[in-house]
Length: 191
Image (cartoon, rainbow, N blue to C red; front, side):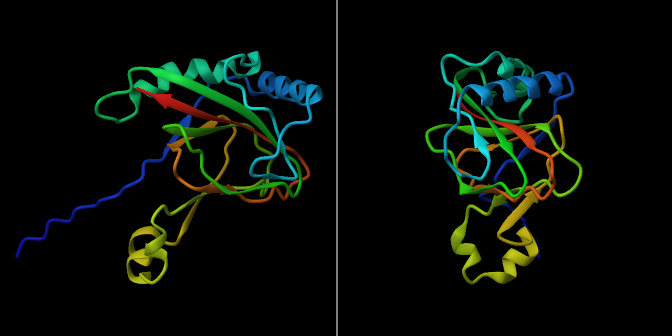
């Protein structure tokens, strides 16, 4: 008997350490952005979400954009990423009890989050939701053995970035610490 084990419908998630960014400088720039505008409401509950920046991008986001030239060509895609057609970025400040409801990012290829400030303690995980909803309605056998559940948490680490398909639903658990958790989220259209 020959068994050929094939995994299909896999979903990529990339965790990347980005050591060259000065997070204190970026943190200061994000707080300055917050002083200039009240932000917008998207998936955020209780936290601050900056306006989404497309063409005129704040200088505090420049280190993230610069890091993309090193990161994107090294991702294991075939063919390789050759061009960033567009990028949009925004900052998030999640104070105590703030969280983000489940959402995805339509109209782009890859989404990401970079952690600028991560307080000690339970400051809120990012949770990636299984993109196969039918699997979670009656196929516990496979869910148990392959996914471990309908949601997979990842823990914020200062200086780390996650990249994932923009269609992947995700949410952020409440920040239970007394300090702000600060992140920068972004969407990329690639070629």
